[in-house]
Length: 105
Picture 1 (tube, rainbow, N blue to C red):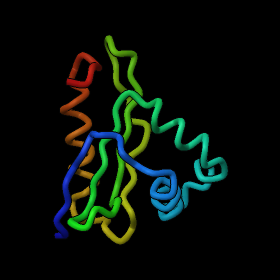
Picture 2 (cartoon, rainbow, N blue to C red):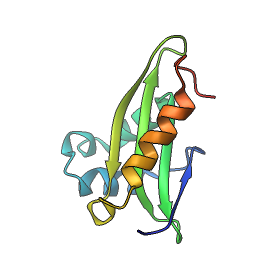
Picture 3 (cartoon, helix red, strand yellow):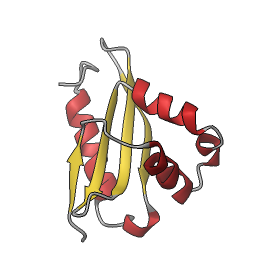
Picture 4 (tube, rainbow, N blue to C red):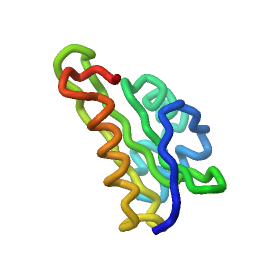
């Protein structure tokens, strides 16, 4: 299993986003790169997985009303890293940090 770290600092460049979303075939998101960047920046919660060299391996994002509900909108893992526990870790982190109240902790 490749080593990776999770981060919620929100630092994801547009080229990284385009590469990740393209790698899983989500072209509806990549057709408008600026809109994709805005969607990520406007999400209530974003967690990313990066390898030891800092390359983006995966991303999860949630939308929330900050009162009662959080909805996991996207979980993506570059196909090169699928099956290595990255998606499970992203989901677990998003689930934990959005909590039952719908508010990131």
